[in-house]
Amino acid sequence: MLAKEDLASFKLGELLAQYDYARDFFISIGINDIDSNRSLKDFAGDINQELLEDAGLNGEQLITNFLAFIDKMETLKKSSCNIVESITIIGGNDKFGQEENIKLELKVGEVISIVGPTGSGKSRLLADIECLAQRDTPTNRQILLNGEIPDMNRRFSIENKLVAQLSQNMNFVMDLSVNDFIKLHAESRMIDHVEKVVQEIVKCANELAGEKFTRDTPLTQLSGGQSRALMIADTALLSLSPIVLIDEIENAGIDRKKAIELLLKEEKLVLISTHDPVLALMGDKRLVIKNGGIHKIIVLSEQEKQYIDVLEKIDKKMLQIRSHLRNGGVIDESITR
Image (cartoon, rainbow, N blue to C red; front, side, top):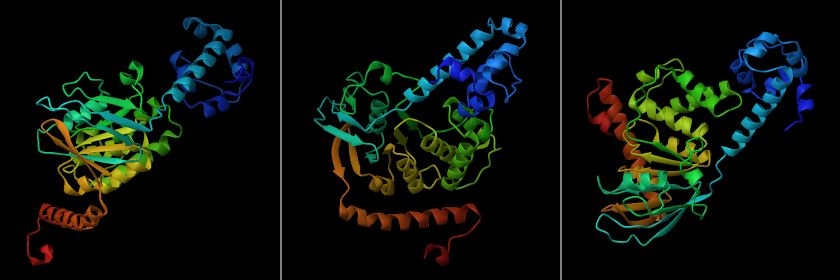
């Protein structure tokens, strides 16, 4: 961080360009008109004294407080980068008290599918990971970060959540457009080049969604599939959370393979609770849940990989038929070939 005398000699235009959140400091004390060609020192010396007095400041304090603001924001920006290389699941017990007797390490860049009958405990496993359980949930599991017990600050931090969860129901209630929602999120993350980020997220979301939408579309008018596509793109490109938990993605009407590839490209650890055979086989490992416990761990084999293409072709045909019916078509030999 620059010394106060160095920072004060910079032109305000240079400071606003380097620290894109700096304008918020001036707005917070009622200063909206900023001469970008003047240095901070000159600006502080010539500003309306009544305005400064209303803020409880003088020119010198304005510079001091500005520097402290920049320092704090830069510290926050650095601390928000969650460096997670792996999580480890240490087994607890199932619904009947039987020990899971496992210790499983999952690494960033992997896709883990979680399968099992409805009610078997898939969502409970995701919840244990999300809260970084420490033998304090019904399953008695323990979750380690990078092989170590996470400290309480990281476990319950609101600002620096390690886990982003995409649930089955993603309905927005905020009265915002897609553009305003992403912009608000980007600004809260102190992201540079907000406009570029908004464009990229909308572009990626539309590549995932079955039905396109625009930046001006109100959030409340998005379909379930569009909402899920938007949140996946937002999570991949904007969220700092290194772990992504997805609960039932198959019925969202989005391109599932592209969604996973996007998340992996951004170096996430992806865990998917699913009944979909294609998604299940996309996982590097498959956790089979039974009676609330991890019953079996299956590593994807070369033989299973050969069946993915076959299942994807069947899946694409089903999507084609669904789209055909939605658009008023009828089923005949030509559509089933």
